[in-house]
Structures are given as C-alpha cells and as structure tokens.
Image (cartoon, rainbow, N blue to C red):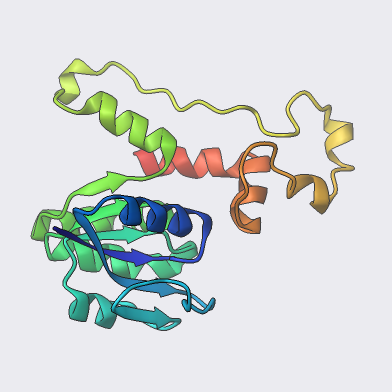
Length: 194
C-alpha cells in the first residue's frame, strides 16, 4: 500500500488524482490539503485548508507527495518531500522555476525522486528513462500555439480577458489558463525542464 499526500486537492489535477487513488486499491489517500476550498467531500484521515502543509506531511508520513499547489506556496512541500527521500509527483512548476537549485540540492541530500505530472515533462521523463545524457542529442517541448495562434500583432492588442480564459481543450484555473493562452506557460515549462 502506497500512502499518498495530495496537496492542491480541490484543483483540476487534485480532483483527477482523487479519482485515480479511488480506482487503485494499492493507493491510500493519507492526507489532503487545499489553499482555501473546504475538503468536505474528500475522504482522507488528515485534512487541512490553508496554512503550512509541512506539519500535515510530518503527521501523514506519506510514501508519495503529489504537489499540485498553485504558485510559490508549493515550494516548501517540494523541499520537504525531497529532503526526506519521499517520492514527489510534481505538478507545481514554481518549485523548479523559482527554486530549482534548492529543490535539486534537497534531492541530493535526501534522495527523493521527482516524478513529473505535467504532460510534456512526463513524456520527456519517460523518453529519458534508462538513457544516459550522452545518448540524448536534444529534447523538444511542443505546443499548440494557443488560442491566439495565427493572429497578427494588431489583432493581439484587442484580445479580451474572456478570450484568454476560454481554453479550447482543458478546464483549468484562471492563472494557468492565461499563462497557457499567452504561451508564458511554455516558457516556464522550458525553465522547469532545465
């Protein structure tokens, strides 16, 4: 039985993760946290809304931490997991974009594995598995071009917030939706991959 701590339990990734845990009897949701949304419908013995999740993680002692927290708030949980040798399923890109050196140092100290959740990074991770750096010439991150692909510079000046929030494929929170629409997310993914 693998004990899973889910941080960001009420977001789109968190909700999908709950479905996966419920469908796999070898997984147990030992703790769940959200930034501000109540966790009334989440079945976990330890729950927390807001605040520092490190104490929650200490009590839960998970085998895997799924960090789906939005923004810089997820960095502490990333460091907690890696320093303790706990597997980290990482959906919080800020942990590597803003604190990559700290995260990698924590990983070296504790031995925790970083398992990418984001589709592009997960695909790269799977392609690299079992290969040495010398065997890889290059890696390519792909992108659709977003909803504004093909628009002229003049047309882009008239884009409305509603257009930026209307993602054609996924239902996500407003920050990641706008970052995806403007391709800022693709830049963050590139930094994260390094």
